[in-house]
Length: 113
Image (tube, rainbow, N blue to C red; front, side, top):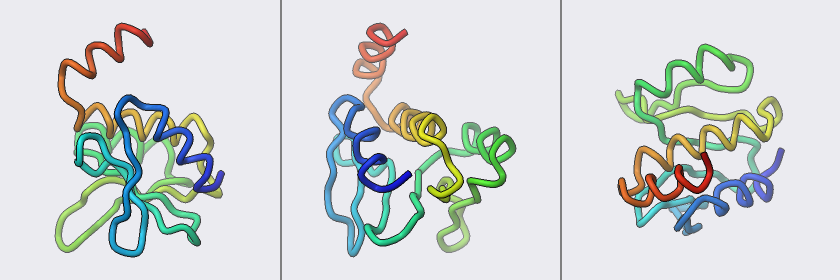
Protein backbone atom coordinates (compact mmCIF):
# COMPACT_ATOMS: atom_id res chain seq x y z
CA UNK A 1 0.00 0.00 0.00
CA UNK A 2 1.27 3.48 -0.82
CA UNK A 3 0.14 7.07 -0.40
CA UNK A 4 -1.64 7.15 -3.76
CA UNK A 5 -3.84 4.24 -2.64
CA UNK A 6 -4.46 5.93 0.72
CA UNK A 7 -5.41 9.10 -1.15
CA UNK A 8 -8.04 7.24 -3.20
CA UNK A 9 -9.55 5.68 -0.07
CA UNK A 10 -9.64 8.96 1.86
CA UNK A 11 -11.00 11.09 -0.96
CA UNK A 12 -13.77 8.56 -1.61
CA UNK A 13 -15.38 9.63 1.68
CA UNK A 14 -17.90 12.50 1.43
CA UNK A 15 -16.44 16.00 1.55
CA UNK A 16 -12.89 14.87 2.34
CA UNK A 17 -10.18 17.16 1.03
CA UNK A 18 -6.42 16.86 0.86
CA UNK A 19 -4.47 19.83 2.18
CA UNK A 20 -0.85 20.56 3.13
CA UNK A 21 0.06 20.14 6.80
CA UNK A 22 3.59 21.42 7.51
CA UNK A 23 5.86 19.07 5.47
CA UNK A 24 3.18 16.42 5.11
CA UNK A 25 -0.22 16.04 3.53
CA UNK A 26 -3.45 15.81 5.46
CA UNK A 27 -6.91 14.48 4.75
CA UNK A 28 -9.68 16.56 6.28
CA UNK A 29 -13.42 16.70 6.67
CA UNK A 30 -14.59 20.31 6.82
CA UNK A 31 -11.19 21.43 8.04
CA UNK A 32 -10.81 18.77 10.74
CA UNK A 33 -7.76 16.54 10.27
CA UNK A 34 -8.51 12.82 9.90
CA UNK A 35 -5.07 11.61 8.82
CA UNK A 36 -1.60 12.83 7.89
CA UNK A 37 1.28 11.35 5.91
CA UNK A 38 4.68 12.26 4.55
CA UNK A 39 5.05 11.51 0.84
CA UNK A 40 8.32 9.63 1.23
CA UNK A 41 7.39 7.46 4.23
CA UNK A 42 5.47 4.24 4.55
CA UNK A 43 3.43 5.45 7.51
CA UNK A 44 0.00 7.01 7.85
CA UNK A 45 -1.15 8.77 11.01
CA UNK A 46 -4.89 8.34 11.57
CA UNK A 47 -6.61 10.37 14.28
CA UNK A 48 -8.88 8.13 16.36
CA UNK A 49 -10.49 8.58 19.73
CA UNK A 50 -9.85 6.02 22.46
CA UNK A 51 -12.99 3.87 22.28
CA UNK A 52 -12.45 3.09 18.60
CA UNK A 53 -8.66 3.04 18.74
CA UNK A 54 -8.16 0.16 21.19
CA UNK A 55 -9.90 -2.62 19.20
CA UNK A 56 -7.91 -1.70 16.08
CA UNK A 57 -4.63 -1.80 18.03
CA UNK A 58 -5.52 -5.15 19.61
CA UNK A 59 -6.58 -6.77 16.34
CA UNK A 60 -3.69 -5.46 14.21
CA UNK A 61 -0.52 -5.21 16.35
CA UNK A 62 1.71 -5.95 13.35
CA UNK A 63 0.39 -2.95 11.39
CA UNK A 64 -0.56 -0.39 14.04
CA UNK A 65 0.92 1.38 17.02
CA UNK A 66 -0.26 4.24 19.20
CA UNK A 67 0.23 7.69 17.72
CA UNK A 68 1.74 9.67 20.58
CA UNK A 69 2.26 13.40 20.43
CA UNK A 70 3.51 15.00 23.61
CA UNK A 71 1.80 13.23 26.47
CA UNK A 72 -1.37 12.38 24.55
CA UNK A 73 -2.33 9.52 22.28
CA UNK A 74 -4.00 11.01 19.20
CA UNK A 75 -4.71 7.91 17.14
CA UNK A 76 -2.81 5.17 15.37
CA UNK A 77 0.33 5.10 13.27
CA UNK A 78 -0.18 2.71 10.37
CA UNK A 79 2.71 0.83 8.81
CA UNK A 80 1.53 0.73 5.20
CA UNK A 81 3.84 -2.22 4.43
CA UNK A 82 1.83 -4.33 6.88
CA UNK A 83 -1.67 -2.88 6.53
CA UNK A 84 -4.14 -4.04 3.93
CA UNK A 85 -6.49 -1.84 1.99
CA UNK A 86 -9.52 -2.93 4.04
CA UNK A 87 -7.84 -1.99 7.32
CA UNK A 88 -6.79 1.44 6.06
CA UNK A 89 -10.27 2.06 4.64
CA UNK A 90 -11.85 1.09 7.99
CA UNK A 91 -9.49 3.38 9.92
CA UNK A 92 -10.15 6.32 7.61
CA UNK A 93 -13.90 5.76 7.75
CA UNK A 94 -13.84 5.62 11.56
CA UNK A 95 -11.82 8.84 11.75
CA UNK A 96 -14.22 10.46 9.28
CA UNK A 97 -17.23 9.40 11.40
CA UNK A 98 -15.63 10.96 14.48
CA UNK A 99 -15.30 14.34 12.72
CA UNK A 100 -18.07 14.64 10.14
CA UNK A 101 -21.36 16.40 10.92
CA UNK A 102 -24.11 14.04 12.07
CA UNK A 103 -26.35 14.75 9.08
CA UNK A 104 -23.53 13.91 6.66
CA UNK A 105 -22.82 10.67 8.54
CA UNK A 106 -26.50 9.73 8.50
CA UNK A 107 -26.74 10.31 4.74
CA UNK A 108 -23.53 8.34 4.13
CA UNK A 109 -24.65 5.39 6.26
CA UNK A 110 -28.10 5.24 4.68
CA UNK A 111 -26.52 5.19 1.20
CA UNK A 112 -23.80 2.67 2.11
CA UNK A 113 -25.54 0.41 4.60
